[in-house]
Image (cartoon, rainbow, N blue to C red; front, side):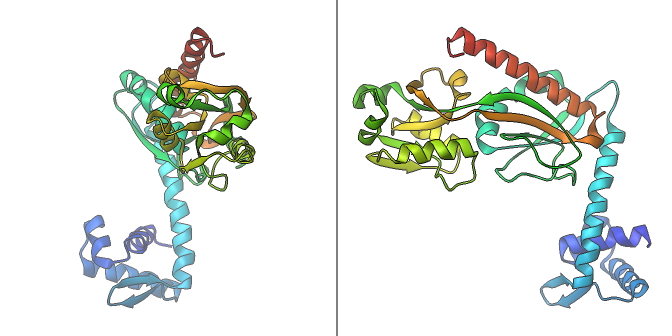
Length: 301
């Protein structure tokens, strides 16, 4: 097939409009239309249903768009590898991780990465959904379980546990629980057990619910749970890495904790030699070493 026609087809399918695709490609609407018509003739198939509100892909068009989307992602990966310099770290790095880890641990430490590599452009994608790294939805991922996708290089970074925390003001006003049954006299702040989260956290929350907390606040991410705790709303279920950046949190019922949650860094095999990936991996590992040293100094390891 004609690569140029496929490129124009992909832009039209993505935009859903000849005009918008033409603007993106710096081509007139009539030129775009001619190319699409020529592609349909070469395939002897109709690729778009045309109507007043725009264009909709036919079944044949969907098949071709799937193929051009895969091609586009592979070309992006090839371009990224070509752009990587052996001497400099620059360009875009798409990083995906969970909302909680991204907002509470990773984002506050990114200034250290930018200090060392000011020309790096990080696109931080915070999602509970696991993005497809081999299909180039992201370049590198930090996840709370070992990735199951094939063709990934993975490294275990550390382990995390979910524990109970409250603010000093809350404890002064409501008292410190001394045993698990005391939860019945307090408000529990946590993620809903049915929400997307690591299994160890959901199991801990399910166990805590059996003690009938007097009140409940559920939030769909740990940043929201932390805000509730900091504003004296109750006792929160939070990952233990928050204690470094929020040292005034009070550890409640320290004998109660979730099972270990492994934290993995992963990236596609084809980016093995990427200087941007190497720089990010080194940055994360250094930050984890610093994190653990500070926890030891605080007596929390």
